[in-house]
Length: 271
Image (tube, rainbow, N blue to C red; front, side, top):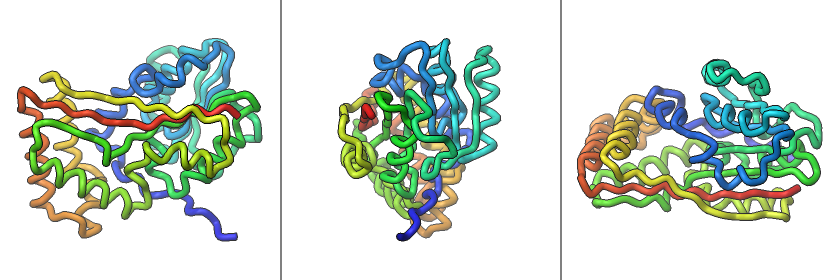
């Protein structure tokens, strides 16, 4: 039997413009579909925890339990530890891990959570099998991923169409699936999960502050992050084309009637 691809290349990297978005994420704005299922005693595994803001929120919501945050990138875990320490949390720990082969026994966790992870991995079905394996009977597998093809905005700044087409090319060349949100239920079924509640959620950016923040971080990410390097090194775009897309983001952000919606697919699976 062939071994599944260990992982895809993480398209974004951890440039400041990426972490500007990641550190904004909370359990409320990124895992609301899960929160009603949490109990104070639960043990939670947070996969792809990044800088740990969602992880820390989950730890506060299970004061009698424990949360373990894992990520493939050791450096980002230092920031996650600092996030937890700054909030005085003692029921959270962090470790390096690969979702394709989790180093935990069967039936360990009450909840296994992954936010914006499966779109970046080499084998999302294998990842879900591993998540199911380490979940206790009666526990939950909770996954949320964005769907780039379903993102929409106004006004129709032409350069943003170029951005979307380019991002999807780069992400797929890196081994990921940028339109993961719509595929989560299908992947879960392929992984052997049966008790699946599939929902969706959105982030919307429309106020002046929101447009400047969202448009600004993508303008910066397009020219200065690992994503920018992979776009040029992979032959997907020239530096001049990236600059034009960056300018389009700033143009959109200045529009008084600007509006941008990010659609996410969500699955909450009972083992």
